[in-house]
Amino acid sequence: MNALNYLLIKEAQYDCPFCDENHLIQIRKRMTKSLVKNEPVEYEQIYYYCAVEDEEFMPSKVMDKNLLKARNEYRKKKGLLSSGGIKEIRINYCLTQKEFSNLLGWGDVTIQRYENKLIQDETYDNLIKMVAENPSFALKLLDKHKEMFQGDRYLEIRGIIKSKIKEKGNYFLKVQQISNYYIDFEEKSDLNGYKILDIEKINNVLSYFAKYINPYKVKMMKLLWYTDALNFKKFGVSMTGLVYQHLPMGAVPLGYNEILSLPSIKIEEEYIKDYIGYKIYPNKEVNLSSFSLEELNILQSVANFFKNKNTEEVVEYMHNEAAYIETNSNQIIPYSLAQQVKEFKI
Image 1 (cartoon, rainbow, N blue to C red):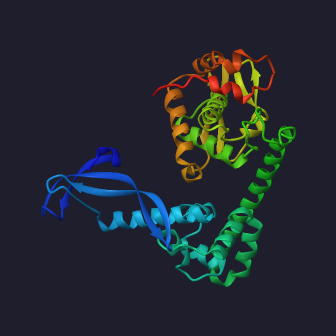
Image 2 (cartoon, rainbow, N blue to C red):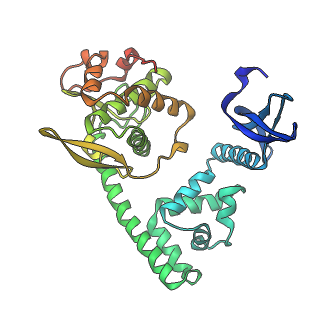
Image 3 (spheres, rainbow, N blue to C red):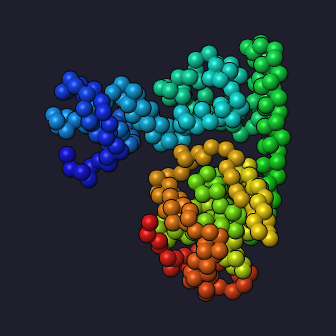
């Protein structure tokens, strides 16, 4: 097979079904097409390859994973939650699969099937989304199906949901505070990279860099700018819709303090010599499914290039960008200058 058609993940010892003996086989991945509910989908398929017999095969567990990937691509195409997305919502409420099914008023194994095999219909999908977006609605469902839960567990889950209601209220407050800074940027333009502010995307980008880099506050601001600048240079649109201002430490998004209060991250003070540093850590698991493959490539490039550079080095690097040199203090940095951003090689 042409090496361009697949990517070698690793080699491992395995009981080969063709040779009937344990030997080194290749574990590969490739893009392939399949029909799901009579609709074509393209997805990343994993398979095993025996070089001795020049044959490929899939163990049953791998086949199951591939089927789930194909179904998730169908879900994405139809605007439905992925299996991982459903699981994330369930875990956010600290529920087992059976408990989540019972809260929704469904059969005990319904959520288990949606997370592992079956594709939910639009009506069920909308109900799960409503629970994710509105904890108050989740509380009403819990009370409605109270008899499905034992007393102590019911009270425990109720307490968890109530805490989510408070968190959601704080989140909406932060969203409103951030949005206030962007009141003059409600139309697509060169100043927001032809993208309306996407706070959920910002939340996920922050979470990504917090997990893989643990940057300090100033460095995080530059990671955001390079993410948006490179995305704009490659695809003509920013990733987040953030608007950046020329400040002494480089490009900084409007409302940066409020942005750093979003729930995907947490900030801890660290005393470094004679000053306090604000280091950023993830507050939840990164939702990689929220990014396209192109976006993940941008994020990975930025993370790999800057991960071993300290804050001062990152600031100095940004100071040499045309976007900084050709703008004045406190000026909004137009994204058109990102066309000149230095594309770093990893």
